[in-house]
Image 1: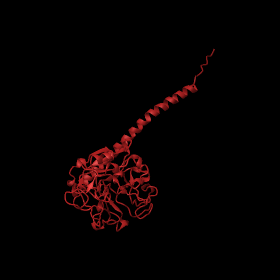
Image 2: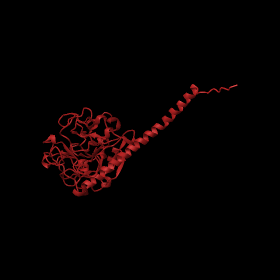
Image 3: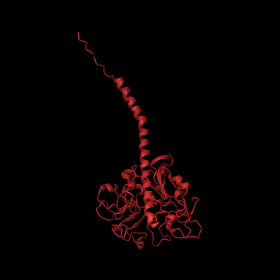
Length: 342
């Protein structure tokens, strides 16, 4: 007699138990995998920030000056600029901007252009203010350049990294206002004037927003060339160029009050933070692990001595880590009162 053995399959209940166990394991492992991914991305962004800091040190090794955050170009290409053109408005807007990143990656410098990206943020960073390209990947949705144009293969084309995740400390990287009618003017900053480089922030990361609305003005222009201004004027507030020139030794600038740094809830639909009347430090990122429920996550901060720390923006203000002088502004009494404003 032939003994026919019958194979026994899984019952429906057994299959459901297996599926439930797999789902449970996935539920346990996914948060850990997500945290590991976030930490890896934060570390990659920190490594890029460190590379940028080293690039700045290399760039100033021959000139002893920090590069300006941005200037109006003297032509549509190249890094040349004229001091007399650096006023409130661009006399030749077709020339676009020359950004501090260009001093680090152009003409055989040692900083790769991709170092200005952070893998955590969309497309690695914000686009140039004037991309000057019809490549749609170099623009954000609805973005317009300084001439009110959308994607176009021409000028203005900023001399800047194509994607910019980082912004400079405006007290060290001067803006372009070297001439004009303002009470105070910008001036180039010697590296030796930064008295405590290990405790003075050089650059950090932009706050991420949908289509980079966080740094987009009402005219749909994304201002990725701008630095953040860490201080406010004692009488002029956020318009630091109008702060009167006081007596020598009298501080005219202050760290913003704790209440001027917004909690995370207030930033959900934030726009145009580089023109914020309370503090442009609200444009600093909060997209890395760490931090707390009120203020959100952390950002990478590269210091003037080249080291990088991951911190919350509010803590950098409380610890007064943006400098003790408004180095990039001319005029007397540009010392910073280390007590915050009310």
